[in-house]
Image (cartoon, rainbow, N blue to C red):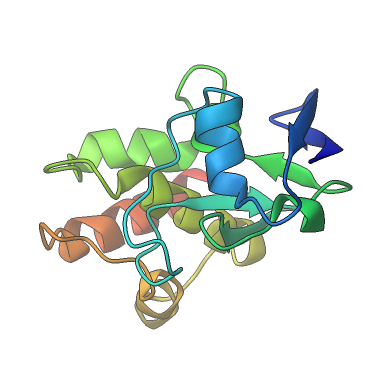
Length: 153
């Protein structure tokens, strides 16, 4: 076991875990930040998406030892009151059905809009393509990303 200093949602943490422990388990099991979800465990679905230095990353396969000097943001840290433009758009469009993938979808959308504040429909589809929604709310996801994009003008 080793001590790792992490910056998560603007706060500093120190954790004593194995170097290959996935960030997802540090977030959920060690720190109690359970908004980031576990689903596939092999970085294929996107439910575990967090931001590492403003980049969308899959936390289920990301060893904690690789992020100790990085700024990590989880769904809990995206905004203090759920008022990030993507979160507001998600609510306005009523995207969530079961809700399980939504934290990862929102984190991916927020990272996409940070890089490209005014994406085309094709860029939204391409940017969100790697996230799986078992309920099939892809049309509403695209609509919410477009709405959030308009709010950031």
